[in-house]
Amino acid sequence: MSIAFPIIPWCKGSNIYEVNIRQYSKEGTINAFVKHLPRLKDMGVSILWLMPITPISIATRQGSYGSYYAASSYIDIDPLCGTHDDFKKLIVKAHGTGLKVIIDWVANHTRYDHQWTEKYPHFYHRDTSGNFAGLHGWIDVIDLNYTIPEMRNEMIRSMKHWISNFDIDGFRCDMARTVPLDFWREARAECDALKPLLWLAECEVFDYHEVFDITYGWEAMRAFDKYFATNEITLSQTKEILNRYLKYPAGTRKLLFTSNHDENTYHGTEYEKYGGAAQAVAVFTCTWPGVPLVYSGQELPNKKRLAFFEKDEIGWNGQIALHDFYKTLLNFRKRNKAMQDGASVLILNPGHKDVLAYLCRKENDKVLVLLNFGQQKASFEIDDPTTAGNYMDLFSEEMLSLKQSQSYSLNPREFKVYYFGE
Image 1 (cartoon, rainbow, N blue to C red):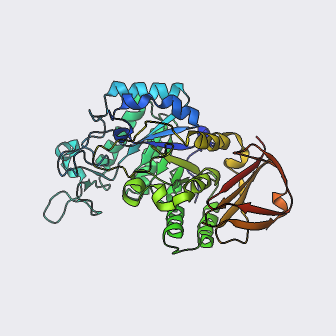
Image 2 (image 1 turned 120 degrees about the vertical axis):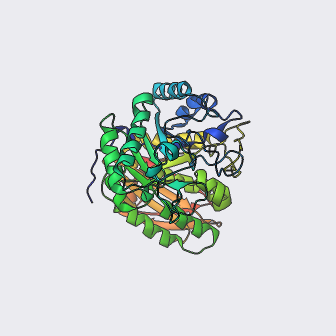
Image 3 (image 1 turned 180 degrees about the horizontal axis):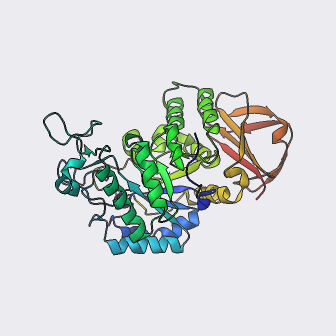
């Protein structure tokens, strides 16, 4: 597979912060979220991904508010979120602080009362009785038919609307694998002609990297879920998945996360899934090659599931306890070359079933990561010439010298990040 599109320079060492506007504040508006931009910039956030802010259909709506991903328009803004002017101001202020903004794009389906169902009813799949049809079992949406050239052209025109009128920086494409790859190729070519954009696909289909800069690391996350929750697989089996990720072509990236909007609601918070190891897994997402994702409220940390179809705001009262934790990790990724594209990664053998250890290297920079995911203290030895050298502890800022054969001891759920370089 060849990468068809150039790598966006500002994605180097970057991260993504997923913004749930509805739940972010009591108001649930764009303007209320804008107040958080300075804090997020200080935390080291690079890219904001806004969940859909388009109007939500009324027909077949689930719950009181409905799904963000069942829209009635591709080009309007939900009045509950704000106005077009509010969104323009958000983009201007975000850009003014150095933040990029990508928006959620739901290309596979719409709601039953979407504007297109009346204006372009022939754009949709139909069942044997001639009714609008959904192909994936979702009760509140109907699927678009990508064999219709006119529909594809109208979809791309709608995407261009957000680039031309709001100056967005890219798209997170919902259920990207359910939309033909050749459409995404066409859409990216036309949209990137207006402005070079970042493209994130919610899928883990290898071939989609031909178009997309980033695809989801679902397989790794599900492996961690099974390791922690059910002991269904071992940590060694999880390492096999990580080794496969390392064999992806240069320029491709995996999105790594412990939570997102689906995960939080349907599978539980990172604390439900990983318990006391939640921060250790977060360290993994921020130090393994790829792009880390932080979901709204994880920096609090938020320990409740947010209702998907209702208003269920994040409680920002009090101290944001993990602000400095994420600030340390996210800013470190930007300055240390071993955390960026082109770094080599060596998975080390600590000889302990619950310890994940790896060394990242690029030019003169090195990062050694040690993660004890177990519930017991882990004592182990790493014997590898590549790990020898002088390092600084990322979190304590203490200097230490490591030998080729070095003994380590980590408390339950403890993590260490040692680095050499910037």
